[in-house]
Image (tube, rainbow, N blue to C red; front, side, top):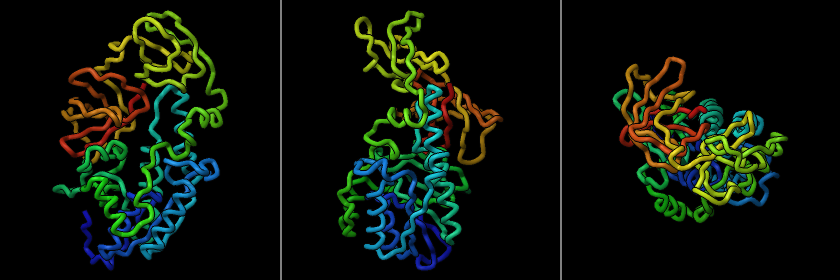
Length: 362
């Protein structure tokens, strides 16, 4: 994992530090191993919007915590203002995706467009041989290229959120925590005497105060809560809603149309401002289309049999993936999947290895 041609003392590593226990331990382990370590934290959004907010990452308190850890380890710490870049690449995309009736995953965009792109470039500018992060994934050297694999601890595995990592980025990245459970990470934090040892994990989208993404969308896109109809798949109007951004495919609770058979959100129609509902069996999906496909390695010309995940919380299922020259792909499930939503990621696996993935289209 930490294979370099030079000795540790002659090898500079930049560690992406969010202020949490994971990235802090990653930095401490690198210092302990004797590397020339530089800590780097990104300021990604207006810190005033998240003042006092717990459960986020990259907030004002987190930047302070990262600085404290670097002082404890005796390494330099830099803060990079990426607020404008983050707003364009992540927040605007998040808002636009919801307005298209999709269910976005901004953390993937942040990793691929900011952390593993802009920050990686800065690390190289500083003469680093690698960018180290606290993600729970594993990187192994294959016969010819670096490979991305699931973390040893399934409950902590973050490979779904890193599918858009390119082969070039993967060659430069290192993930020292992927081979250990979270309990071991916290044990290391205590051993190193880090004040963040007991700090809770981030849970929410970092730029969404109190988990209320609807209030954020109202500010970003006035008119996002335009009312419309709740329509059964047979065409019957069952009620009205206060904005399609309040719903996601597969949702059952909170529809406001009590009585009768259980109904689920089948799809969203942003043009007609309609929420389409129906019975559970109507959620069955046998095939999907993907855009912006990323494949780690050479894209195969023949269909690939593998396992795919269509949501971070769902287990992988058998499927066949066929690639197109336009950067898109067609996925056929061996058995129907339920609750597949546009805007989510579909990630390809072969055993523990991540082959790549793409974005589910409408």
